Length: 549
Image (tube, rainbow, N blue to C red; front, side):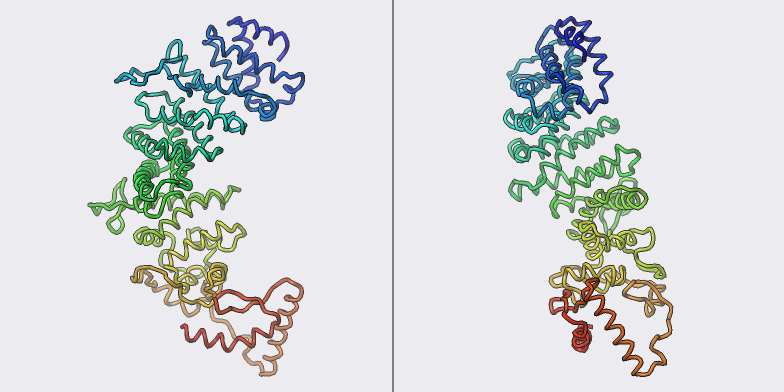
């Protein structure tokens, strides 16, 4: 900004100031590189002049424009860290009506009088006040995101208390104020961990925010702005339900109610007609990862009717529509990661919720299994080849990303009721080897303390039974009968081939390419010193396997 323009701002001439700020804001709307403002202290000079304008009550009509300029300047992280802006931050809190004794001029006529003995600091009509509050909130969001000192100042000023006071108020605020209130609360609770127990326990945040969501669901029509606010509230709830500090009983009651509200949100927006509805559903799934196993039972409520409808999908006398939508979301993210360069991280919350659901409730496990592991019919393809959910999950069993690999393996294993033979049937021994090795199940022993219902729920199809004898369990697919490669060989030739194979494995071992192992008594692989140790252990392993089978 030129010196002449700075002088105009100092003059405080409303019309000329407005023209200069309009031009600056329009020109720098998308500015993120502030190097040119670091010469001759331009950033600090402009910052100080604009805040002088904000302290002038005679220029209140210009305050939204001034705050727009401040918002642009708050993008400069370097300047925020090298300059003292504590008093300016406090002024922004006042303009956002997040200080003691300040309230917003209401846009909507109140049905009841405010009983708080506070005086409004706002001057002018409600529209002007709302615009000022919104712009101040935008600035605060930038500052909290960019500056550690500003976050600490929010803690000292108990900013979260004032935001929650607006949440619990009977006053109806504009969508813009609600959105940026929640955005600011999300940023504070995300970046300043000490505020989470304050919101959750002292301010009863879970109860009030859950009620807020519940009230929103009453509306038949929700705008795009409403859906954006829903997303911000769900993000705040995710923050404050991470590592809950309340007593187990009290937290469980709140979690049950919250899960039931989340279920209704998932069902209402489960068709995912647009990106905003998708965001709501996926934020709901993120939030469910923090819910206890007992709370997740609220996802499948008991139904009196046996007929499915648009708001109900009946399975074993339960409405599993919300669970079905989560499974559909799994397919959506799996297809996205397959077809685009999307990060696998978007899959983790969905898999986490499905694993927890499958573990905590037999009805949910039964339904998840019917979708992910339907009865096998075509066994001509490898388990990891295809577009079914089972195929996608089998592909993840051998990826380097440990979290997605382990979650995929656990979900499949739970669907198989932790039965090793059934797991191998659906995935092949090779794909399942990582899971089996980590759990000490390479010798196909039974899982101890696995509590599942005794019903079979695994009837083989006729197609599978016909091909079963020719299925290669290592790769998990049908292979036509092949000629025995040892057929026609003398015993000496067979022994020679065996020694050749042993020598080749030994060479690979010595060069560090492979590390031969045997299955130990704990069912886990144990490295060996020499390849001939495999031959020594073979008779005993065969005997042990015979006893287990």
